[in-house]
View 1: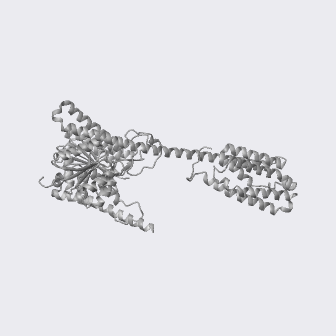
View 2 (view 1 turned 90 degrees about the horizontal axis):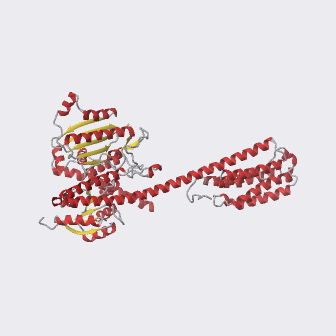
View 3 (view 1 turned 135 degrees about the vertical axis):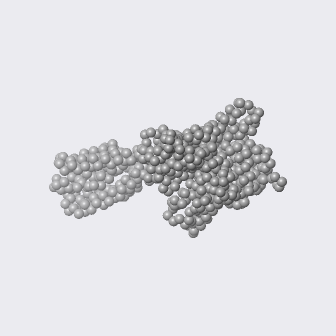
Length: 221
Length: 405
């Protein structure tokens, strides 16, 4: 890497794990600008050091990882968040992705996979595990099946047939390269499709939040 | 007495409200009854005196029957005394002919309020005690146990005891419910703690694997073994967590929040209803045990009748056996579970060499196709389909589709 190294911040409450990840990242030539052991520390330090990529555990003391993600990405949409979680509670992972995380990896991933994921996250690629693809597919189907509230004020986001197809292949463990081969499209196009699915989910989430804010704001009058 | 639930709506609270209204209304009724027959009384003064006491007492103690705590033993004692005294005063105040004809006592049906207060406060034993006293007073008032007196006495007695019994049952169920809620809260807390611990253990295992893998070239056989063990334990624990933690909470009826901890529907529960819905995810989690098998699924429960879910899960198991048999122990497999509006789809893919075109059909024609037949057969029985296909260089895929009933 000729230009300035990638600035990474590692947030995890287990010191040994945090240090190990930080060492691996630093060893690969990335600059670990900060680490944090709890949610509040994470928000404060990330605001101070402004990393390119935040490697975030979801299970944090003081403030859950999902909340950290929401606050930081809300304030600075250019921040990239890669979720690195141990047990992958479904609801948390989905919530984090809706709140702006663009990558997800389980902790059993190898060092190479982690480095690859951090670099891809940094350039704005969506990093999906098959598990995350399954969750996202499920979430779109859940939203399409109709919201529980009586008036669907915001229409449910929908995937195009191609996006669904790509996401299903990701969930079945195919690499982007294999998907590109199978669908006879370019690697870049596969990436775009995957990214669009996340974009739609995040947009829907933001619209819902705004709608919620307006509704509660009006109710207060 | 035993801890009445405070603040929250209970079964017995409406009874207290009804009783509060009943006492005031029956007091007015008794006074009205007296006023309409004033000239027939031999000692109207005595009756007026009694009614003044009754009215003052009833109005002064309106709040005493608003709940179990306000309703003290002293109040109950005085209340019943007033009722009994009223009954016993009746022959002195009213004319003998009216009493003989079965006319009302001075407190008339107000007496029942007092007995009911005993019932609601203390259950059927207290009710039996109070109604027996009232019955005795009634018999003394009438002088002789005539048939309609007995009839009325038994009616009050049975009603009071029944209501007392109902109150006891209601209280017992409320206590059980409160206890169940407590257990559930405790279980949830324990699950949260367990999750934290598991999370930590998972991390450590992942780290051992990672560190050891880095130094594995010089580590020798022990390290290789350590790496393997750590990897196995990690995936076993992950599978356990994603399936939900088994525990005593299964004995407690509970609403299952979507995406929350799932009820364990392991292959072991044989006693359950074959048509009861079970979460297919819980069954499939049992298959994704090794580090080589990944499971992708929706975040919300995918429910199918137990019978169907088990067949589907067995078909997935057969497909995974097939992967091991044809693609080797080292092959990786991915299970994708999808919940569509009208069907459930499970896809099992491996990264093995795949199936040469036509080989499956050939095998089918020759009649030796254990796997395909077992999987297809199972799915056909469920009204679904199983499709096997293979893309060169991308392994083989089995797609199982089951229609929703």
